Length: 201
Image 1 (spheres, one colour):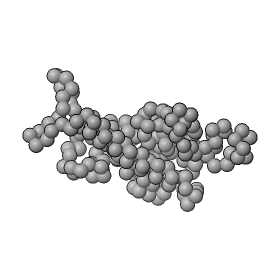
Image 2 (image 1 turned 90 degrees about the vertical axis):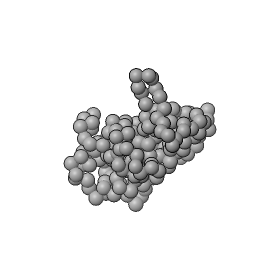
Image 3 (image 1 turned 135 degrees about the vertical axis):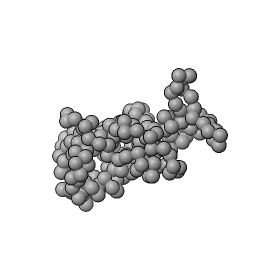
Image 4 (image 1 turned 45 degrees about the horizontal axis):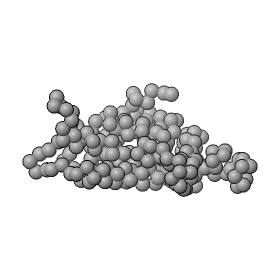
């Protein structure tokens, strides 16, 4: 695998704050480049695949984005990534590691929300990120985009088939009855099935 870590993040802290934070005066220092890269690696690269992710990183770093890749970044990837960054940075904004241990960040006009409210808030952030992720994937795989993203089309990540990922945990359809798979579970193809096991050939 190429060294994608040498390239700048696909978005910056200001864009994350502008797209996902209610308080636009949030200190950008709270959204570090490492957190943005973490969100890229954990949430974006698995959707795009190593090759297309690497292509976007290189072109973005060098200012050489193709027209199609630039539109994809502006209208789809940046929104999706911004919400995943917010999901990853919430814990760091709420708490801080000091010599006294892990403490909550407070000021005179704020109070810490309950654990239930915090979990609901974080879950809602992840839900919004997933909506943008699904929209981004639908755009990439839409027939209107045929031929616009050859690197993605030639190296599209294998489907999870009968599994479902939520908050980094993998659930199996046979247990949780998650539907909506986008590939044949036997041969793994996305559109035309190439096996005789599922009856769709």
